[in-house]
Length: 168
Ligand SMILES: [Zn+2]
Image 1 (tube, rainbow, N blue to C red):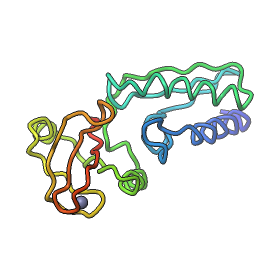
Image 2: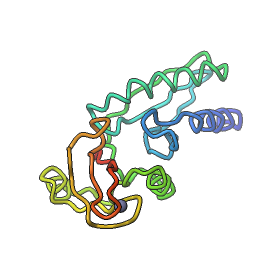
Image 3: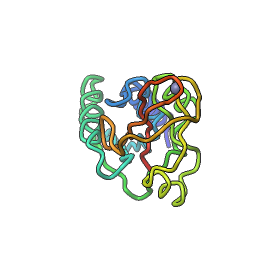
């Protein structure tokens, strides 16, 4: 790989860093683990993105935002491809991203998303600590919060509703 290619690749990653998740504006798509790869062939740039959740409506918006960002930066020959070769897991989110998510008032996903955890989250028995006061006295109110990717919880300790990012 030539130095020029490496340079362009780094530039593209810098641009992608400016694309934030439409649902979670404090996080960019690299921190979210959505931007998976950049490939340069000649003057053609290909960006690979993996949806957090196959039915996540935000993906269309994210794909559009990536394209708009590349156009804005003067990249004319590019392609944005959805990469389904691996399944997105919350482990792809950086630890820093999870902290930012919590600061934003959304309970971050757990480190490991085993099937058992998933079943627990579906049945509502999973305990999600409150992102506002760290209390475990929380209860699930709805599997679907403002979007399908988030569940709505209520904290019985600080009496505040909050959302839990549950995409797996
Ligand atoms: Zn609370």
